[in-house]
Length: 106
Image 1: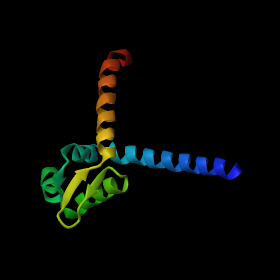
Image 2: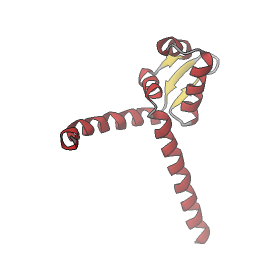
Image 3: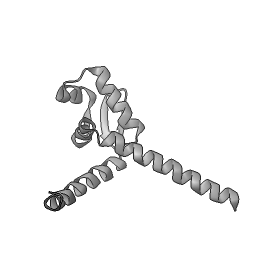
Image 4: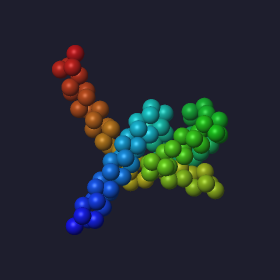
């Protein structure tokens, strides 16, 4: 019973850490714009954001580590994951709520 409780707490801790990191990475303005442009390829994204290979690779690596994209390193293709779809939908829904709440905030 004690091991089961510890295991459950560990899973909750890891899940919270991963989820918060997903939001941290995904909510960066450029990263969020990248997510909305997917599917794409690395070269197109570099051109769109006027970034050289290394800065774009850093962003793509960060998004990939957070689970928000899948990248084919041979073809340069960058695709959404299931998390990407859910994340974008959540942010868009939150934006709608904020729009409705702005008059109350001012």
